[in-house]
Image 1 (cartoon, rainbow, N blue to C red):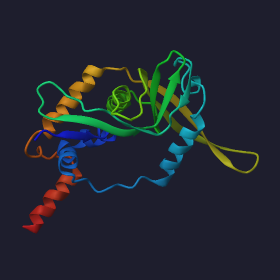
Image 2: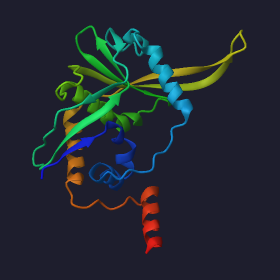
Image 3: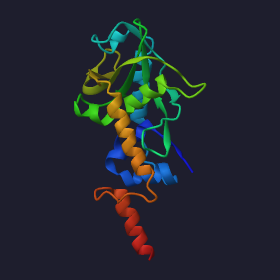
Image 4: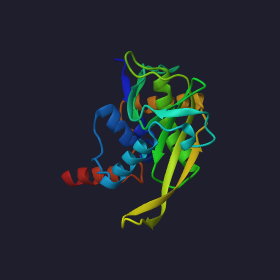
Length: 226
């Protein structure tokens, strides 16, 4: 039977890069890694950043961006099924992006907020996630959010650098904010999805990554049970 795999953009960074076996087990078999709690402070910082930029001019994110307004914060997207040549199965994208910008030139930008220093390596790590949101927005499933075309993708990296004491006795963190543009390359993104389908269409999971702690734990537990 042909499958239509649900893919979460948030898995395209760390889960896929760390272990394709864990990725297979989650998507194909519903067997997830144990959930690692996110410290509450990071969720709070993320919420503050989104609220701070909501409704502001795009120049508040980066002067390099075309004129526009920041809107559509934290919206769910879902694509229609994606068919790739030579594949017996299809896939669709479902996830929630951080923020979108509506440009005056009648296009959109998708922004991902990161509490981290500026690093060019982030483009490779998080670019697939941004491409997934862009694809879903331009090719939405019926009734899902549609924003097209998406002309810009990027990361807004916010890094605390020091603390400042205020006159009222409170303290604030001073931050450095960096915009990292992610060039759009749909052909490379579809090639990435093809690699995912190649893994998911296998009858059995791929070999465990030698550096994956969860696979080592599962294998050790299995040997102990025997």
